[in-house]
Amino acid sequence: MTESTHPDEWQLRVDMAALFRIVAKQGLHEAVANHFSAAVSADGRRFLMNPKWKHFSTIRASDLVLFDLDGEAPDLNKVVDPTAWSIHGQMHRLMPQARVVLHLHPPYATTIATLKDPRVLPIDQNTGRYFNRVAIDDGFSGMANSEAEGERLAGLLGDKTRLMMGNHGVMVAAETVGEAFDDMYTLERACRTLVQAYATGQPLNVLPDEVAEATARDWESIRDFSIAHFEEMKAILHAEDPTFAD
Image (cartoon, rainbow, N blue to C red; front, side):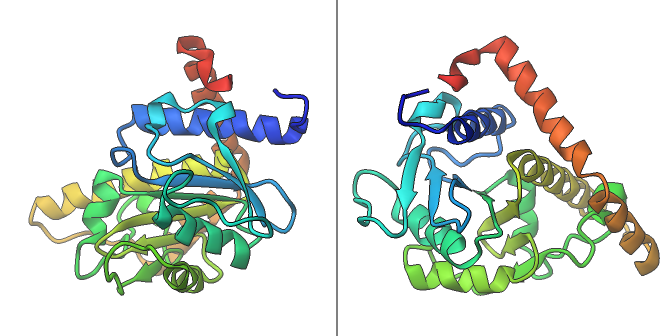
């Protein structure tokens, strides 16, 4: 930690660096693309994000870049990918409650995003977590490289915390790093189950609405489970290679 870095910001940097490496180990990232961000200020206008085109598996706490929406605009040729600035900058500007924002192209969730019906249908406990709780974007028009596109995505997310980005990938927003990680992890596993179920060619046994709703509410009552999951994964990572915390 540098002398000018507040302890709370440094802990956030460490947690985010761990998150990047955990996600890389799980193969959920896209080359040196995809981005995670986390708000430092209460209004969300100062936030941390991964630097341009650095592989998730190598990111350290000190590598994360601190951006300020009220400061000088970043150099989009050097510091940050234009698509990252367009999406995450607008998410933090328009939705300060979205403290941590993850955007990925994970294999199974992206597969579902390519379907004409990209809903995560409730067919088991994991898919039930997302019953009526995922916003859908069916307006993909190419790479998200403008602030207007970032504004559009933030508007689509609305009062939800997950966005199935049709023909693109997924976005998850949460209050903490741990909750964001567990949500993305479970969403990808839910989509894997759904893809495999579709692949059988047999009719899906979709849960009744009341059962799916009860399942989703049960998930919402165990935030500590999500945080504990991340802390366990971080401890495993620290035992294997603690350099993420540098």
